[in-house]
Structures are given as structure tokens and as C-alpha cells.
Length: 249
Ligand SMILES: Nc1ncnc2c1ncn2[C@@H]1O[C@H](COP(=O)(O)OP(=O)(O)OP(=O)(O)O)[C@@H](O)[C@H]1O
Ligand SMILES: [Mg+2]
Image (cartoon, rainbow, N blue to C red; front, side):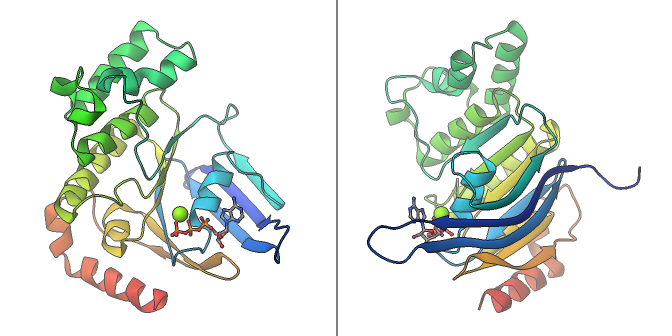
């Protein structure tokens, strides 16, 4: 078996939002996309091109209007990281991260140990008992990522998780995210507005266009892994960014 197995296969997907007062919105039209197991894929494109809609449909939070999606995981387990961290203000860091385990009644010793290892990996161990209001924006983002990883779903969907952060914190968290990704073998679908972020993180960058929301081009990113600060100085890194900026226009 030379080729890696697909994790998510999307065929001929359309999404139309009905609207009582004006014309329906064709948010997505004719999306065809296969994502491989363990792959890191980013989605970029102009505001309103349907990135969040596509992620929500993959995550089962929104219905599709036409087409099919197949998942390799029969239980279809996934984690979702939203743009704002949405932490429960009265629960501390560890309790927030543990929340999916509590809801799903999966607080086994093994899962609790994994959670502590993830908190450690994300540099949050010392802040386990801190409340969200005591955290910086970057720390909150890390808690929401650990929370999405806590029940060990094979697929992680991230909608601009670092969008609200300053460039330095974002660069730092990108490296942390890649570390976690390489240690946990997740498939990650990552929405961003930043071309640099997409290139730095991804195996492939999906470029979308608007009206109707569709895939314009898929660009494979052939930079060596593991990636670190130095990867940004690679001349190929700059070339990919320039090329993407050109097609996004
Ligand atoms: N619940 C909804 N009801 C009706 N229309 C919607 C709904 N959600 C999104 N839309 C429309 O669908 C289109 C795609 O929206 P979506 O939020 O997926 O875009 P996006 O690419 O994530 O944009 P951004 O980069 O600004 O986050 C837009 O025209 C938007 O107005
Ligand atoms: Mg969006």
C-alpha cells in the first residue's frame, strides 16, 4: 500500500443557505476534496468564500445541500477549535480541557493521564488551576486546542484559532501545534487568513474563491519537516507565499 488512506472524502458538495427576504446564498458549489490520514491541510480564501461553512459541514454542525462526505473513522470522532476560545469562565484550565471527557463520561485513568501530558506539551501544566480570566489570549487558545485533543479524536477542525493573536505569539503557537500534531498523528483541517501561516503549517493549501464558494487551486507545500523558525527563511517558503498571494489576488 504505497498511498496513504483517505480520512475524509468530499464529493460534489453544495451548500445553499435559504433566505426568506432575499435570494438564497450559494455558500459552496461543487466541492471535491480528499484529505489523507495524518495530513495537515489549510484552507485560505477571501472573506465569505465558505471556509467556516465547509468546516462546519465536515464537523457535522451544518447540513449539506447536495453531495456526500465519507469519513474513515466509523464513529466520526472529531475535535473543533473555534475562532474564539469559548472557555467556561468558572472552570479552571484543567477543568476546561477535561470538559469533553466529562460530557462523554470518558474520565478513565488513561484519558486523564493523556490530558495531563497534553497540558504539559502545551506548556500549561503550571497553570492547571488558573481561571480563564487570568490567562493571556495565547494561553486561552492553547487550552481550547488541548480541549479539542483531550478525547483523542483522529480529526481536528480548526477555524482561525490564532486569528486574534499578535504575530509573535501566533508564530510560537504554530510551532507548538506542529509539535502536538507530529506526536499525536491527527488529521488537521485548519482555516486561516494568513498565507504565511498556511504555508508554514501545511502539507497542502486549499485556495478557495468566492461567489459561489469553490476550490480555486490546491497547492502542495514541499518543505521539509519538522519545521521550525528556520523554515521561514527557506527560499521555497517565500516562493510559496508569493505564489499564493498572486492567485488569491
Ligand atoms: N447561517 C447562515 N445563514 C445564511 N447565510 C450564511 C450563514 N452562514 C454563512 N452564510 C453565508 O455563507 C457565505 C459563506 O460564509 P462563511 O462564514 O462560510 O465564510 P468564510 O469564508 O468563513 O468567511 P470569513 O473569512 O469572513 O470567516 C457568506 O455569504 C455568508 O453570508
Ligand atoms: Mg469564517
